[in-house]
Length: 400
Image (tube, rainbow, N blue to C red; front, side, top):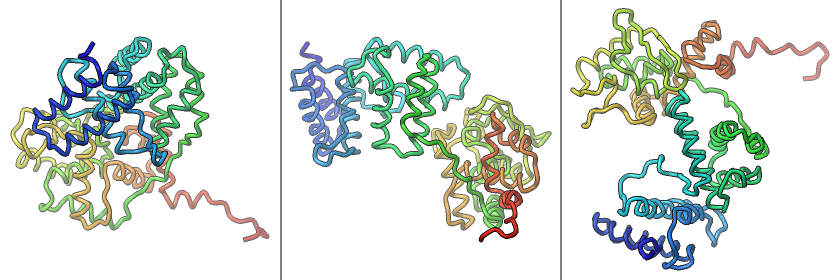
């Protein structure tokens, strides 16, 4: 029993930190969190469980201010993850934390729900990013239930959903809350718990579509000129043009493979990662030129068949959306634009320019790869001429 007490597990964490050469100041911060864990558990002789760790990690409100403490959220969660790793394997895992480890309930009644949900998602055919969002939100909710003494979904009701969302709202932005609601609702629908799904509507989370921004004509021209400039790396220029002229999402830019590029027809064919739908887009001359320059002259030698890989070793595919965002932002800086931006901005710009050219909405939807054609309608708000044409004249005699 002594090997699973709070004091023993925390001692193993400290030993692992010293063994890995952590700075004394960092270990001191861990010791501070350990003392808080011992107070939370009722002493160092209390038995450590993953449920206890989850509850400790969730105690993120400061007694002094009464508000959410980001420092507590970071420190307590960090310690709980290391203690959990010792409980799982008998050794402390100091490897880089990934979000997939964030939330896994251990109470059998909730853990089986998580396992079944993950199995369903694995065979759902949904994009990997969507699966990750759904899995993460389910884990957060189920571990929240666990930390509040609920051992099965049969014992949950709408008040638990509202309490969970209220806790998120104390530290998440309203835009993130909209994502939380949309990521949590599928779990409840799958479980047949319409009462829990309906409770989300009582939380007052409003879903709105902001008017999509676009590039003015001058900035659009300067960005195209920057992409054609040889002082801009071909990789960054090609990434920018794929979003600017083809409207590709960042995930599709990252996943693009050499075999997807058809040089004979000057087109790119791929299966969209978000929707699973096939998509073929034409390559413009500038895009083809910069893409060929990257593949033939600048791309490092590597066995990875993705088009875009890292400049520095290991020469593997770009890791995430931030890589695309930074590449596009570098080109924007070179063009002298007073802004940063990524593929979303350039997709909006591409849609707006197609609208201005009187391109039918179904065609724009096909080019952008929208699974639902109605998703394209949000871009109509950026077409000033079209919006003005919808304004009715003021009737004679009407007040100004």
